[in-house]
Image (cartoon, rainbow, N blue to C red; front, side, top):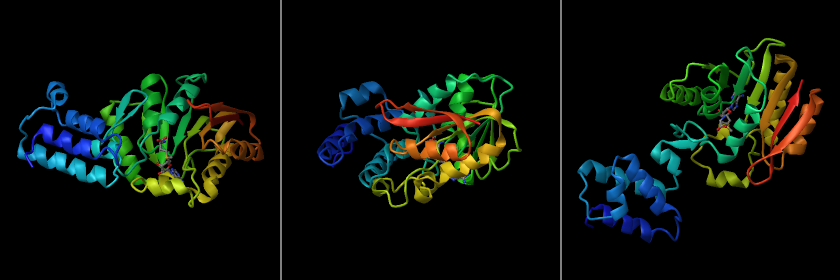
Length: 273
Ligand SMILES: C[S@@+](CC[C@H](N)C(=O)[O-])C[C@H]1O[C@@H](n2cnc3c(N)ncnc32)[C@H](O)[C@@H]1O
């Protein structure tokens, strides 16, 4: 085969029956390699270097193997910001962007003690830190490799108001010390059928015992670590609102409010200690 941009677009087109978005994703990939928009738009017989050919062939084999395009590009867009991602962290999901809007409505000040537990790529904590440079956030994860990625993203965005900490949720926090706990914990059941299509993402970021153990452990720790009047907010599965509400009630939280995602599904629950 003649190895030109044109030939690779033809190859992508021939795979659209099984990979609907492959042409669009090839365009993203070529852009990320620094190939200009005009060359991509013309899909011309532009000759490629050996190194470029190797990268494009890797793109095709990884893509056809089912590696998510964000991992191939090592990039994910969250709330309009670019985040580095690889298989050490969950790819940020669009619905998680709305937890940011929920939190922007809280009255946070430079003195607020804010913790995000289970930070993964750091997308929630770093986005909040960029949008509210006056606040400080501590972001924890139990996975050291996830924390390495969060540190890369913190550097990428030149953010100096996020501290990263290796911890089992907020077990580092003292009693009655926090104003806000944020978490999008792993919430799939280990038997969830969606896991079949999520084989490249870290299991520790996806599943938890019964799907709800993360909420129970976090609510339990937060019921001691939050100050009276402090707030907790969870992202959860759209069928878990009732269960999360019951867990929060069990730990004596009040003012429990559930908000919806872009599709109108129950997705974020907040409460007060
Ligand atoms: C669903 S991911 C969320 C990642 C990121 N906050 C986001 O919203 O895209 C859950 C994260 O919780 C972390 N995690 C799982 N168990 C934990 C624990 N016991 N303590 C702290 N973090 C934990 C995982 O490593 C993973 O990064």
